[in-house]
Structure formats: structure tokens, C-alpha cells
Amino acid sequence: MRIIRFDIYSRLMHWSHGLFFIWLMITGINLFFTKSSLLGDPLIRMVHIYASWFFILLPGMLYVIGSLSARKDVKELTLWNEDDTRWFLHFIKKNKPVIKGKFNGGQKANFTATLLLFTGLSFSGIVIWMKSMFSIPFVELNFLIHDSMAILAVLLLTGHLVFAIFYSESLRGIIFGEVDEKWAEVHYPVWKMDKIK
Figure 1 (tube, rainbow, N blue to C red):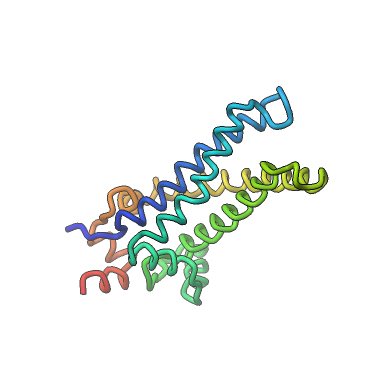
Figure 2 (cartoon, helix red, strand yellow):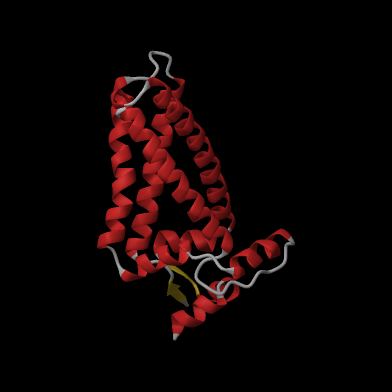
């Protein structure tokens, strides 16, 4: 039997953020390695800038107009407690950690890192885009911040994809919204019990 883990709004928030990030990563790498000018090819630059607005605004809009379930997911991902710290200790020791909610400590850490990188990339990107409003040293600093955060974001995405492939039922959950009940009982027993009440 399969049970619903993520509704359509949770999945749209996840995939809108992820797919636009991949698009920005591809165009950003192109801009970084283009030798024609400091800011790269004008067409690629324009595509990069306009895609960034979807990257910034679309997940927020989906959060606002979305479901209570999607907002609860985001809220839970931002709440840290002792269980999450304990989860990391168990994970490092290769013990089976007990997860008392819908998300484990690793998923919460990934969300927090993603949120911090999202914020840093957005603000530094806006400074670079509106460079005529700022001093040259400040713009150059934001180039460095933007590039550094982009590298960290690519590393985070790589780790996220590796875990998603390794834990394929989690991947099915974020694609189709449903997971196997027995899998949920093993990995998220408290959430599963709350779900079927």
C-alpha cells in the first residue's frame, strides 16, 4: 500500500527551485568561462538574469498560494531540536537513528544550507545585475561571493542527488507524492503513524 507524503504544492516548490537552479547553474558556468567580456555573452547573461527571477519568486509564490500541508513541510524543515542532533550522531556512527517527524536531521540541514545559499546567491546576483548603483569594490566582492556560493550550491546539489538516488523511495515520493507504507514505517515511523490516524 502507498501513502501520500508530498502534495502537489510541496512537489512544485521543490521542482521549481531545483530545475531553475540547474538552468542557472548551466548558464552561470557558461558566463564564468566565456572570455568575450567580464560578464560573458549578452544573450546568455539575459537568460540567466530572467531565469533568476523565477528562481527567486516562484517558490515563494507557491508557498503563499499553496496548501497548508506544503507550509507545514517548510515549517518543520526550519525547526531544529535535540532529535536532529541525535540523528547526526547516529548517522556518523552508522546506527539506525530514530526520526520522530516527517524529516530527518540531514534533510533539515540540506534545507537550511539551501535557504542560506539561495539568499546569498539572490542578493549578490542583484548587486551584480544593478552594478551601476554600487561601488566597483563592492560589486567585485559580490562577484566573488556569487561565484563562491554557486560552487557550494553545486556541491550541495551533487550530494542531494546522490542521496536521492541511493534512497530511491524518497525520490519517488518527491516525484509522485506517494511512498510505500512499509518503507515509511521503517524510515519515518512516527510520521507514518500520524499519517494513518
